[in-house]
Amino acid sequence: MTDIEKSKNESNKPQKKTAKNSETKKRDYSRTVVVLRSFFASPIFNVAALVLLFVAVFGGLRLFSGSRNPAQVSFVERPLANAEATRISDDRILPAPEIFKGEVYQATMRLRETAALGMAISLVVFAEYAERGSVPANLERIVASISERGLMPPGLETQNGEIFSPESVFVVRYQSQPLRFEIVSRPKEAGSPALLLRFPLRSLDGRTITYFQSKPAVTLSPAPEPFAALDKLVAGGWTMERWRGEMVAPNDKTSVQILAEEKRLLSEFTNNR
Image (cartoon, rainbow, N blue to C red; front, side, top):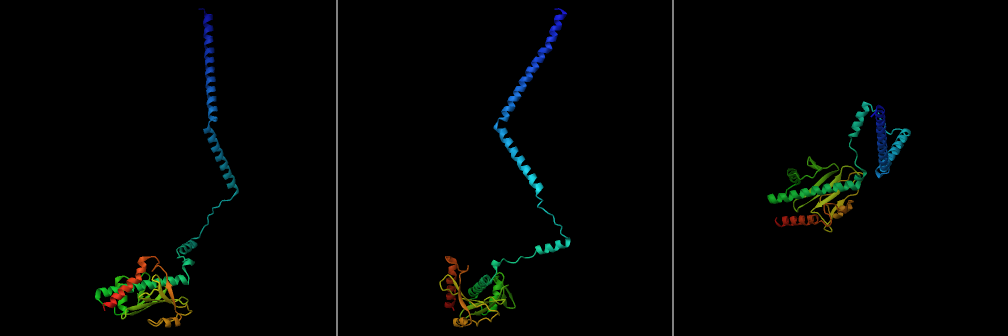
């Protein structure tokens, strides 16, 4: 082979390599185009594009509205002296709602206190009779026994032989023969009625308790005579009322038996004397 032929063969080799490289690049480009077209036509791309569009629109609206509207948060500096006064005012006891005020509400609470005190006295009388065979001789012994046995209702206190609560002053009349007692709940302030509850409890229908209530007066009227007759109470402005509170609730067998149990104990005490 001559030198001329060798040089021709060597010059043809780069041309072949260049042709092969161009064909490879064309194939790679075609594959890339096919992949991109398939991706852009896929549902995943459509969903992603829609989400990005919503995010962009929402962010633009927030930025636009934020630039137009002023900030809604403001900082207020409070002097040290005012801060202490505010702290004290925040610690104050808020008054009770209006629903827990008024003559009817106060009378109901006082009636419950009176009934609770009457039950405590009844328990002490029957406990003393069961232990010693005789009932307490006087009211002082009953009050002392209530304190010793821890039977004083919550909210009630004794001082100098007087029983009182935040709303009432109680006048207790006790009689050992025949066994009976009554409690007069007198309000501490004028304008509320006085309440009178007698034991043994009286009931007209077996489910409600009968009690007496005076008319609200501008000035506190004196308590009625001990164990006054019904006509005298009526003449003094007292009315007979029925209590349908929680003490004896309708359709409650346990509560309805309170009256019957008290009558049974009283009858047993009378027969054994």
